[in-house]
Length: 199
Image (cartoon, rainbow, N blue to C red; front, side, top):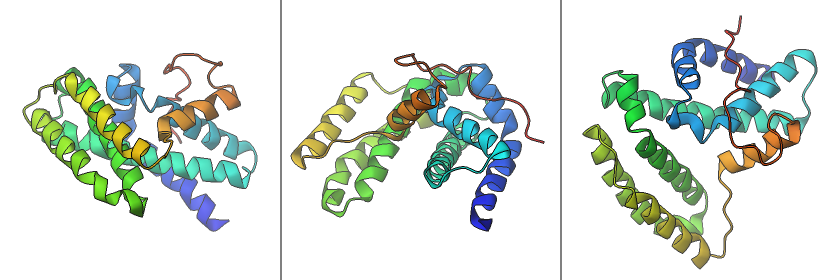
């Protein structure tokens, strides 16, 4: 029980500490967080629900998984903002599609690292990540072809091993639909993400 409370307390502290960045990204409907906005929406929904009633074990797991994911994504975005874009949000946003590409690569790398039989395939993803980081270090977008290259690499890895992959953002989008946060087949939107300061 104490561990669960700590997770929610950690989320409160994280949201307070990152309120300016979260608010800026959400209010500007940033492309850098568009892909994982369902995760933010579900985590906030479960946080609010926990204030009123005890969550089920499954909901606690969804919350902790979602929070861990959001925390990691924001760490990457915050590092890029500081190190590559001199805290200039507009410059970061101008490279939003490439930031998203980098986040997708990181997702797939994490998935591969969690499966011993896939680890020999990670070099191509690592090389692609290095190339994408070179573009971001110059403050420019990678070519559109890099998205197709990522598709080719991941398709080759997962089809060769007969694995069907579902990314975290896809899974949480389905969860958001189940909770009624999004209507069925609704395009991801930012309205459900709560912006109020947690007191």
